[in-house]
Image (spheres, rainbow, N blue to C red):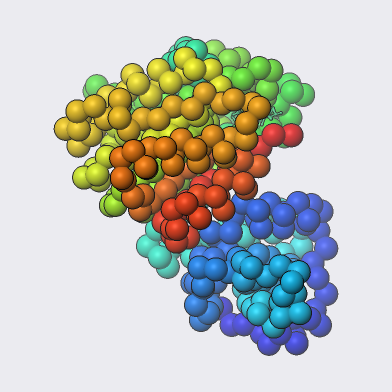
Length: 385
Ligand SMILES: Cc1cc2nc3c(=O)[nH]c(=O)nc-3n(C[C@H](O)[C@H](O)[C@H](O)COP(=O)(O)OP(=O)(O)OC[C@H]3O[C@@H](n4cnc5c(N)ncnc54)[C@H](O)[C@@H]3O)c2cc1C
C-alpha cells in the first residue's frame, strides 16, 4: 500500500460522511490494536511500545494515522509536532458514506489478518433456531440453539453480531424482505438494534446431523439484549450479520490473566473448558450479583486444568462489583494482593469489560505488569449510556 507524501495528504479534502466523528472516536478509543496492526502490516514503520496510534483524518481514499509518543503532554508540546509520525493507509475502493467507510475498514482488517495468517471478521448472514431458553445462573439467560454447520466447535470467544429486529417465529430462514412480514419480535424496541453475543459452547449433536450451541445473555433490567433473548420461543429464528473471532492466540503460553464481567464470562468459561496452556491462568471475574459466580464454578475444566487441584479455589478471584469504588481500582487491588501473596508474574492478559472501566484500567495494568501491546488484549464489550 503506497504512502503518498505528507504534502499531498494535506492538500486533499477530508472525508465528509454522517457519524464520521463517532467512527473516529470509537476506533481511537477502543481499537488502537487494529491501527497498530495496520501500521505494522501496511507501512515500513516500526511501531514503538511508547507510542499511541490514532486516526488523524479520513479521506475518500484512505486514513491518515498518527503515532504519538505516550508522554507527549503540554510541557513538551513544542516537540510534539516533530515527534508525532504520520502514515497513510489506502482503502481498496473509494469511501462515499458511513456504510462504505465501515466496509473499507473491515476490508483492511481482513487483509491485515490474512497477511498475518490470523482468523478474521466475516460479513455474512447466518441463521440459528432456538430450541430452548433457561437461566444458567441467576442473571444469565441461556439460549439453546441449532447453529449453522460451519460453526466453529472449539473456538472460545467466537461472537456473532445479531440483528435483534430480525428474529422471527417461522421454522425456516426466510429472505430479508419476508422476515419483515413474518416478524414476531419486529417491534420498535429492537429497531436498528444489534448486539454481539459469543458462543458459550458449540457441539455436534449425538447423531452428528446438526450443530447445537449455547448463547448466554446477561439479563440486567429492562434492556434490548435481555428483553430480546427472553422473548424468543422455541422455533424462533435468529439472524447474525457478522462474525468476530476473539483475539486469544497470545494465551497459548506463559502465565495468563483473564479478566471478565458478565458479558465476557461466556468466553472465559469456554476458554477454561478448552485450556491447553500448561500454566493455569489467573482469573478475575466481576459480577454485580455475588450468586452469578456459580456460572464459572459449575463448569467442567479442561483435562489440563483438572490436573491442578484447587484451581477454582486458588486461581478464580471473584469481585462483587461495588458501585462506590472504581472498578479499575478494585481489579488492581485484587491483582496486587494476589501477586504479592503468590509471587506470580503475569506474562499475558485478556479481558473484556465496559468502555470507561477499560480506559482507566489499561494504563494501570500496563504500569503494574509492564506488558507489551501484543501481550495485553482488553476489549470493550459494552458501554454505559
Ligand atoms: C465481541 C463481543 C461479545 C459479547 N458477548 C456477550 C455475551 O456472550 N453475553 C452477553 O450478555 N453480552 C455479550 N456482549 C455484550 C453485548 O453485546 C451487549 O452490549 C450487552 O449485553 C449490553 O446490551 P443490553 O442490550 O443488555 O444493554 P444496553 O442497551 O447496551 O444498555 C442499557 C443500559 O444497561 C447498562 N448496561 C449494559 N450492559 C451492562 C452490563 N453488562 N452490566 C451492567 N449494566 C449494563 C448500560 O449502562 C445502559 O445504561 C458481547 C460484546 C462483544 C463486543
